[in-house]
Image 1: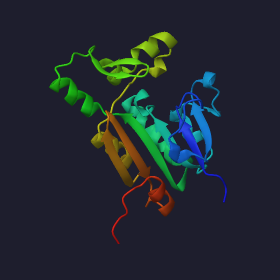
Image 2: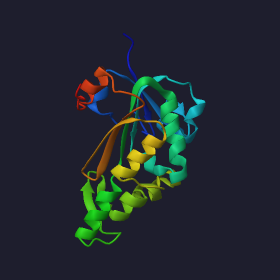
Image 3: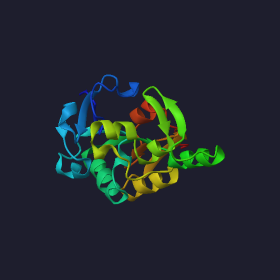
Length: 199
């Protein structure tokens, strides 16, 4: 059997490891910034220009929020275009619903620290609008966040783009979604530890 291929959309650099479930897969990086030496230099809004049905998975971690809301369907349609029929999309985005709840519960201002990361303090503003330190340091506006998601709104966006079978969860201020155009294969169900539908 040929090696499975995962397209890492907006992953910045291959030095940033993928989740362990992709161990042994061929890792191809797509990014708009050529400095990270991606395999494919492309704006994710233009992925329908790439070859169709070429990947077993599309992995997109904390990148979808970098597009305006009206561009999100273009990105998700691109994911569907490059995905094999039995493949899946693996999405991770900030959980804006949880951020809002914590900010209200703790009476946090927009510039108050929400949590400490290995890279330094992260404020409420950083999660909503993008990590200000990195945007200022790099001078790259494409690091800014231009939209946000709750589990419900992400589910709706994926369904509107033809992903009929979804597994969406939230934890640690993050939404994680696995999206399929049809029924999840036995391989994907086992790999992702998805619940098995009753027969």
